[in-house]
Length: 289
Ligand code: GDP
Image (cartoon, rainbow, N blue to C red; front, side, top):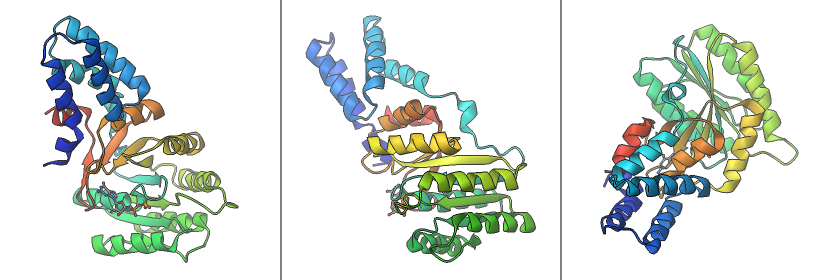
């Protein structure tokens, strides 16, 4: 089964409830419970329920009702595209450890290489030796240079090295991996703020994307941390990983709504190819079958 077959299972259950004709209170309760389980979040579930009740009153088909209400909740598509107008781009990856950040850096490197771009990776998660090693391994697997220093060194210094290399060698794309958690003494938000400033100030003419990498099984704590990243450095997009896992899909809409930032890519597996540009229409059509 393709990943979206699993993701959209709740929807088939809603359809079979709705196919029984006039819906009783307990049917509506069941539909509401399914939407909650699908991880839309309470606020969106309320909005979807209202729209569904209206649709059923006017005898609209439940599938088209759900399709149009979901589509209307996504952010406009203009903001979803990467800023590739100049042909060059720097990307700052932000996110908690374990969400798939390093893997996503590798996936984006592969994505840009496929488009014929030259790519350089910057290992600015200097806090974890394993993170530097992991990025270096992806780099050699993808034949992409990795700018790195010893574990424990200053992340800002590594980013300066990355900038220098990007300028000197004229790369098209620079992808910067960052720490997801720090020593208590060292403040993560201060560090990403510093890295962001270096990128903005040293390469003012190169468009920049600050991408949040979030696990699609994201919990409330992750939303809180995401808001901190948003306040500190600003976010242009979200990469939602592990859509092939236990995700029920509703999280895509929920995270866009709660953070006010578009989902630009979804991760659908562990291989470098398992990355898709996110399109609300394609996504909805797949999970609604
Ligand atoms: P980081 O700590 O955020 O840098 O996370 P990693 O990149 O090391 O990834 C953590 C784990 O998640 C690894 O086992 C990855 O293979 C796995 N992973 C990352 N993205 C995906 C995805 O889209 N789907 C699946 N199934 N696994 C993923």
